[in-house]
Structure formats: C-alpha cells, structure tokens
Amino acid sequence: MLERALSLRGRNAQISEEEDEDESKTRKNISVAMRATNHITYKFGVIWPCLFLLFLLLLIFSLIVRSRNLVCVSSYGSPYSRMSVVGMDGLDSDFGTLGVPWCRSKSERAVEWTSKDLLKGLEEFVPIYETRPIKNNMYGMGFDHSFGLWFMARWLKPDLMIESGAFKGHSTWVLRQANPETPILSLTPRHPEKYLKKGPAYVDANCTYFAGKDFVDFGNVNWRSVMKKHGVSDLSRVLIFFDDHQNELKRLKQALKAGFRHLIFEDNYDTGTGDHYSLRQICDQFYIRGGGHSCFKDSDEARIRTKRKKFWEKAVDIDELCGPGEAWWGVKGYMRDDFNHSNKAISFSEHFKNSRFVESVLDVYWELPPVAGPSLTHQTRYDPARASGPIVEDGRFGLFQRLGLSRLETSVFNGYTQMVYVQISEPSS
Ligand SMILES: C[S@@+](CC[C@H](N)C(=O)[O-])C[C@H]1O[C@@H](n2cnc3c(N)ncnc32)[C@H](O)[C@@H]1O
Ligand SMILES: *[C@@H]1O[C@H](CO)[C@@H](O)[C@H](O)[C@H]1NC(C)=O
Ligand SMILES: *[C@@H]1O[C@H](CO)[C@@H](O)[C@H](O)[C@H]1NC(C)=O
Image (cartoon, rainbow, N blue to C red; front, side):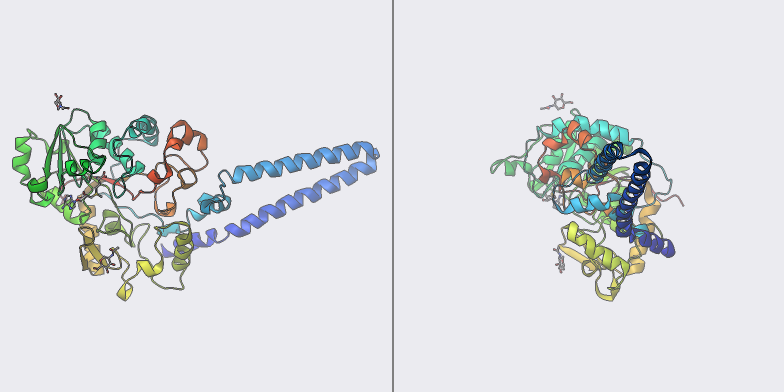
C-alpha cells in the first residue's frame, strides 16, 4: 500500500518534466518541417517552397495556439489558473493513495441516484435557489450543500424531516422546497423568528419548532413519544439533517438508538479541520485510501501539504495536522464536540475502534461531490484533491453557464465540507 502511494507520488513529481517534454516535442516538429522544406527547395525551385513554408509555419503556429487554448481552458490570472496549466489531474491526485478518505459500508450498497440525476437536479435547483429568502447566509449553508440537501430530501421523499441546527432557517427553507407537503421538526436553541427582527430569516408554517424555551437537544428527545404524536410508525421513512456541530459519533449513536435510518451531516470535516469529530475524520484510517498520515516534516506528505496550502485556504499543512506525539487523527489527536466548546484527546486505538464501530453500522456512505470545479466556481477554500470529482468538471464552462451557475455570486461556492448521506442499521453480528 505504502509502496503504491510512493510510486503514485513519484509519477506526479514528473508533471513539470512532462511539460518540458511537450515543448521539446514542438521544437522537434519544427526542425522536421525545416528539413522537409529544404528537401522540397532542392527539388522544386524557390517560389513554391516559400509559399509552402509560409503555409506550414501558419499551420504550426495555429496548432500551438490551439493546443495552448485547450490546456488553459480557464486562466483568469488567479491562483488556480496555474493549476489548470499543470493539469487538474496532476495536482489533483497529488496525495496519491493518501487521496480522499471515506467510510466503508458493511453492505457495500450505493445510492440510487447517478451523476445524470445530479445534473438534472442542478438545472432545476438553480432557479429555486435564486428565490431564497436569506441571500447572505454567512455561517450557514452555501450553494453546494443547499443543493445536496434539496436533492436528497426530494429523492428520498420521507414522511417526516427533522433538522438539528437551523440558525436563521435557510436549511428549513431548503427542506420545504424539496417537499412542500411534508412536516418538519426543527431543533435549534434560538428560534429563527428571533432573527426576523434584525433581517432576513425563514419561519415555516408547517414546522414544529423545538426552539427557545422549548429547545431540547436531539439526544434528549423522547423520540418514541414524539413520533407517535406525529403519526410516524415507520422510522425508515424519516430523514434527519444534522447541522448542529456536534460530535458525529455521538449523533450517530443517538440516531441508531432511536431507530432512525437516514441521516445527512452537513459538515463532514476533513482530518485536521473543523469544530467537531466527523465521520470523515473517523474513517480516515491507514487501511483504506487516505489515513496513515506521516507527521515527519521532511516527508512527501509534508511537501505536498505545504504546496497545497498555498492554493487552498482550508488545506491542512503538517503543523496543523499533527499534535503532540505525532497524533494526526481527528484534529491533532482531539475529538472535538459542540463547536469545539469541548474537546478530548483520544488515543489512536480509541479512534481506530470508533472507525470500526461506524463502519459496522453503515449501509450506505455517500459524500455529495462539489457542484463544480474550482476553475468554474472560483472557490479558493477547500482542497479539490481531498474531495470527490465535481458534478460539473473543470473546463465545462458551457455547461456551468447553461445550468445558470454562472449567475450566482462566487461566495456561495465557498462552503463545501463534504456533506454526507448515510444509511444506518444495527451491527449485524
Ligand atoms: C451552522 S448553524 C446552522 C445553519 C443552518 N442549517 C443553515 O442552513 O444556514 C448551527 C446552528 O446550530 C445551533 N445549535 C447549537 N447547539 C445545538 C444543539 N445542541 N442542537 C441543535 N442545534 C444547535 C446553533 O444555534 C446554530 O443555529
Ligand atoms: C400545512 O400542511 C398541510 C398538509 O399538507 C396543508 O394542508 C396546509 O395548507 C399547510 N399549511 C401551510 C400554512 O402551508
Ligand atoms: C479548539 O479548542 C482548543 C482547546 O480549547 C483550542 O486550543 C483551539 O484553538 C480551538 N480551535 C478553534 C479553531 O477554535
């Protein structure tokens, strides 16, 4: 495994050499052309060869210009324009097999929807998103996750939608757009109507709020009685959306205990980032692609991380990744909870046990891909090398525009944190 990681990284180290090779190829072509004209001059006199040479030079020139254009689909003189020249699939795979961590599921089941469905969904969702009541949702969801939540809620068609963490109510509004008739339960300490006094907020007419003095934490709700009150007998028909910045292991256990099956976590932070222990952090282990990080400052990983940190604000360098005793799991070996108001150092074996537990209850693990590549969205925060491939790939500006995505402000694309949908059930043993 490690060997493979190293050899992959070796391949990426050759990117710059390949570039040089390309140039020398052009040079080679030119000299072949020169030799050919020399040959022709010798045979056919002067005027025709001159015209032929001119024609040939024009042809070569246009070929060079065209191939340049093909490579620099998106050079706006911004940080990522250099990346496009190098080739997204170059720096993209910089991490080699360290790449993108994910959770394995026990049944290896996949989601029903395809990338085609996601594209169709995007086309539908953009005009809806443009009518959102809260235009500036700082500290809340941006476009990518709003789309993900809307798409999944609409696809799954639950009988009841529960959200934990509503802030001004943007996510409540998204859930409502997905399913206009479905009841919603919203658990959030501060009632969204409080925000209405100061500016835009969304309060839903068909939502039961556990907010203000009625607030109860998800883990303390008597779900049996609440479900009965709402006429829900089949818990597999309920969708839960967590955006409350709580330890996701804690939430997973609470949801499992109550008998829920379908969960979406908004902030599925990468290792070394975020204010709560996330599924992605938990599953970042050496035995799958990703994990097994090296805290050695003179390592390939350290060099890659330093390089990537220059391009992506949220990329994590070795100093940020590693805590005392080379603890790289969670955030520097800490399990954060409740907006980082609480954090606890955990040992690697504890962390490893957590990953085994999580994977023993997962039937499906699906991370929402970013909606579009960074050269299109101009996002500069998350590192694309640590995310799955975008729905609209870099270079597909026509598609990006057709979907209406170019109409949106770039700031709405800055909030991607690997939103994840999971289906869970009790361990099978
Ligand atoms: C990031 S915001 C949610 C953003 C929102 N979902 C949106 O779409 O914009 C986090 C919210 O969680 C709330 N919160 C804090 N502790 C919570 C808890 N224990 N349970 C539920 N919500 C909590 C905060 O008050 C805040 O409104
Ligand atoms: C709430 O939902 C019910 C049942 O779907 C519907 O009849 C009613 O019009 C809704 N109320 C509002 C204010 O949207
Ligand atoms: C999280 O909490 C720890 C311990 O209180 C603190 O050292 C750290 O700076 C905090 N990080 C963030 C991002 O708030």
